[in-house]
Image (cartoon, rainbow, N blue to C red; front, side, top):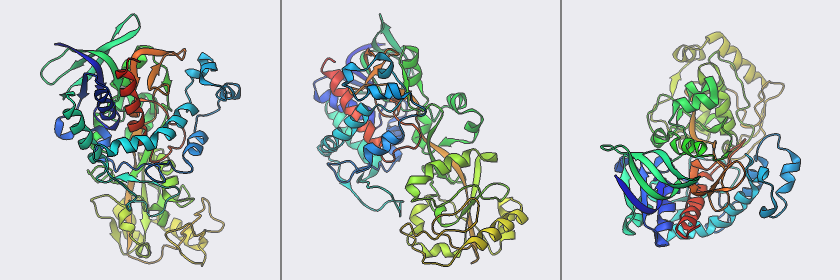
Length: 479
């Protein structure tokens, strides 16, 4: 089977649908490939609340660009970074292909965020700053009413109305090339293999959090303890990234790390987060603390803590709380597991239920309690109620654990999405190792590499929408 299109979009999440709709609006004949069946279309987007790091519908948060650039890469050559102060056209090929967070990409993302949200509103999307599972936070966020599912359904309807052709249960096999230019894709469908669709290609098919082999390749032994945070992540197998790298694309984004979230491994729900840990203590399988559980608001620290948990024996930690947790208003919002906490009337009983050494847990709690101090407990703000002479310290909300019954949750690190992807320019064109656009090839969403170090929270869906829209427009207009 061979079919001719102007633009072929691989992926049906926020990035792919934004690309498809914007290309169709520009008059292009568009196809969308989606690995999932129609009832699960949408990748990770379908399952997320789709937070966006915005002050309002027009402006990004005050710390938006600053946070990105503070996490632009590691040990970067200052002579290369200095080149980015010059106009993009004056950058050397080395810098254009460099694996780092390109400031041009961040500025474009910030500038186009408001117009992109306005564009989404024309599809019927509404935005709100409604309460979320974050009862403390360090920045401003809004989200679409109905979350990511609302984005998927609204944009898919727009695409269908504009005549976009959808190929469900169809997986990218390879890119079609002619003299180094991309001419289309080869794919395998549910009942037919070797489907060829010609046209410019937008890769918006996610990262590789659903691919155990790729995670082991990039993360090593710790990959064995990681699972996707949501059902949509299992469909993200990295074919788009692999195909583009094989075609000469430059990599971008930190291939050695991922956006981590702490979840309850007993739960089969999507995103069964456990964000209540700042109000208790985290211990390893030997009952010992290993981190400051409350160095800052939970939104700023949960990722690094989840990564530390992944490096523990068995990749598992245990959150220990007591009845004083009920002094935290609406703490239940911060736990999305459908499993009840493990409860006990004594630490010995709790340790037995968790299969950790009772004497070690008791010693840990005794040392922690001895290091706590009297002071005002203010659960919804950084209260400075810190331990004294304790390693590691606890910097806020340091209440003693001495009020049974005790409650505990096992916690593992889940892969929300992978950081490693493809180097792109501000037109979402995929670049080769000399910083030149690969003709007719684009990337958006997780397939586009951008993140290093700490994830700039609540920007992934925004990145997908902004650069998906740009990719579709540019491809349709003959770029």
